[in-house]
Length: 112
Image 1: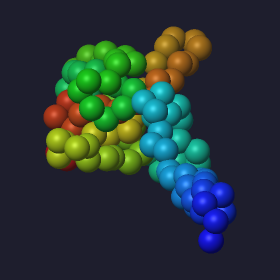
Image 2: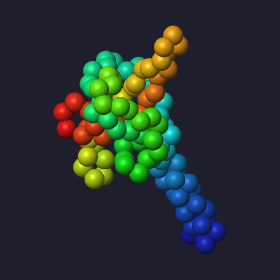
Image 3: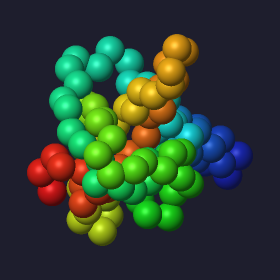
Image 4: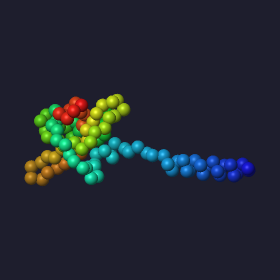
C-alpha cells in the first residue's frame, strides 16, 4: 500500500470516528422548558437559587424565597454526587411569567 493511500485511509477513519462523537450540551441548554414534560410534581422552596445547570458554579436564573411553590419534572445527580431538580417557577400578577432551571435538593422540600 502506498503512503498516499495510507494517509487517505487514515483521514477517512478519523472523519468517520469524529462524526460519531457526542458533544455535551451547554449550560444554556438546561434553561429552557423540557419538550413534552409528562407530569410536574409539586414541592416548596426553602429559599435558594434556580440555576442554568445542575452545579453550584452555574449562573443563577432566579433567586427563590422560602415558601414559594415550585414544580419539578426530573432530577439529575452531578459529578459531586448532589441531587438537583429541574423546576419551573410561575409568578406574576395578571401576566404570568415562568422560569425554568435547576435547584439543589437541599433548597426544596422534595427528597434529597
